[in-house]
Image (cartoon, rainbow, N blue to C red; front, side, top):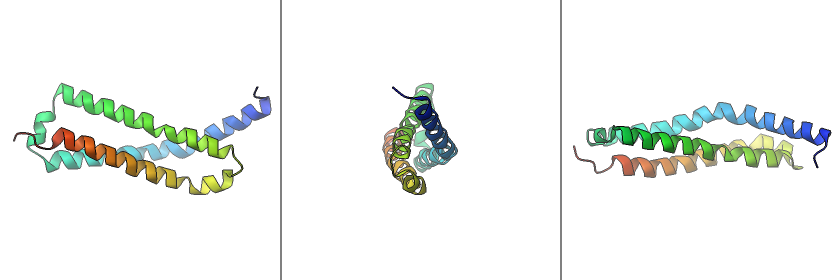
Amino acid sequence: MISAVDSQTLKDYATDAIRYWEPRRLIYNAALAAIVLCYFFKYYPGSRSEITLNGAQGIFILAVLANVAYCAAYVADVFAQMSGYRDLWRKHRWLLLMIGVVFADIITRVFALGFFQNRPD
């Protein structure tokens, strides 16, 4: 059972994680949007045929799923903050952000290629 002291500490860890990760979500989403736009324009005008209700819904679902995946950083962050390595983790958690952004960029590229490549002009 969690005591009142532990509960307050957990609250502090969660608050710290939110303060760190939420402003950086903008960077994450901007990177993913840039990739989609780059591939849209690379394969234009053929990619224009994907501007449909179904295409927009598909991109919206993938964007939501990408943001759900971004939330996985909270689990790692709070867990690391609760360990004896909290100070070291707080100095280097930007590495998790960079690895996560690169991983998400690769996945986004694969989906963008599938959406926009080899479409009729």
